[in-house]
Image (cartoon, rainbow, N blue to C red):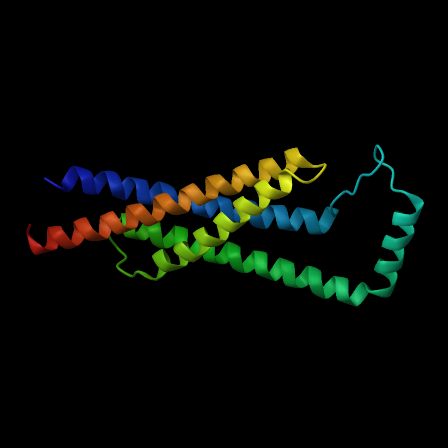
Length: 171
């Protein structure tokens, strides 16, 4: 009786796991491209004021070591988040095929979902208070999609675990 439901939730778990992997790859690619090409600062129709430009040049010259360390830390954090997303996605896919029984990836997915929810709120708040509202809104919507994938993954994992346990007990 629970077999069709179990199959449906296993499919949902597999799909959510794949979505988490894709979002992890997207985040790593975005961070890499931003570090290689930098972010564009546009003021007054694309021109930086002379004061802002001289301040940025002075910061780059005097704090180059700090900037390299800060950029390295950010890239390391993004890489770690990408690896965690990859781990969660692979574990979800394995669970969907019936080969995984650990709760660790579900707990990690819950922590990542909380971080994702925080980023959604921050993105939407920033969209209301900046000139680049569309950019922050788009980033917030992408992160919202990621959050929904986490919620679906967690829900599907719990249901699959419960139905599998019930099936083993013969109910």
